[in-house]
Length: 479
Ligand code: PNW
Image (tube, rainbow, N blue to C red; front, side, top):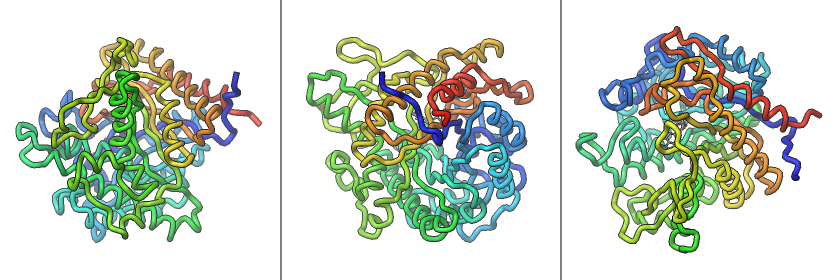
């Protein structure tokens, strides 16, 4: 048996995001984000849910830090609401000191509790004013400048933060926001869903802008803050593992690899190699933007670490017809069953998510090989549970399915590290709390803690909350 132990300085804990937990949407000068607007449009979220109140985390700093501390975690990932600190978002717009004070206090309280903050600057909640002003991420020049100014403000005001994440899952901002239209701002070519948008192009433009904004923020940090503050900065990318539907069919094998490139390398190749993957150029032609030499200089080499969000896996089947103009997958089909009839994993509450821990191990190795053994922080991993929201509270806390998910996934990660030399140094489970699950509203829960939305937002740790701590306690070396 290989020794699966993790080093003493391994970070583990939980993750959240501002719009999903904070609430206090109009308090202390916060301006609206595109998610405030979108979630208030009838029909855009499953249960009509919005982030107006969410988990009321804005008013519960002490309670939530105490909860974290009781878990034994030594790290916590949260995101900053851009429109809480710069209500109109832009580089010449006023700063909201009350918003800054909230995050400053959060960081101080975490550090006092011995918990290292991992701070995300942009977890999808673009200030609405920037969307109104110049269509937000569709304008690469304006967006990158405004993002850089916002990033600088946070670097300057939160010097105790040593782990910065520029963007969360730019794939989701791009594809779900501008191609399928399922997420804010909901733009797409389907005129029954949106009056505006072009699903064949806009997501590609948005992705390019996000990469430039990431590059600009990293450059600013490295030049003007890193020398004195000594922190590190990187981007967080999502990506599911893929297996060929028919492993004997070279076209399925190729399609499985292509799916990884369309989802992950779309962002990671520019960051590590300075160009988009060939498979994307081949399918998308000149709809895929080109990097100018100045842009390459900004984006290439802009990761101190790779932030990895990972949840699930799919079987991939190639298709013989030419790609549709609005295709974002790489002209292929995703399946839960393969040719032999094997199922990738059991159902959850999320249509896109089925547990398959072996895929986590394989993807860690794939990333490590392709990108030259980067330092990896797993910035999200977790699951929903089929029907969890319909259970009474006493049953909701017994989330054995989720506890097993975490056991399987954490062990798979430890194996990738021990057996294959993957340089993974931290793991943050999604999520500390049940929260606003975007288009799924409050019907889908991802928390290791029940939030009793109807009972004064009280928190009740689930079994998985404890199990994650036990697993890391066993794995992390004591001396
Ligand atoms: C991530 N998909 O989102 C986000 O970073 C979190 O904010 C979110 O709550 C969590 O995963 C659980 O969903 C995703 O449709 C949302 O493939 C949707 C997808 C992937 C990731």
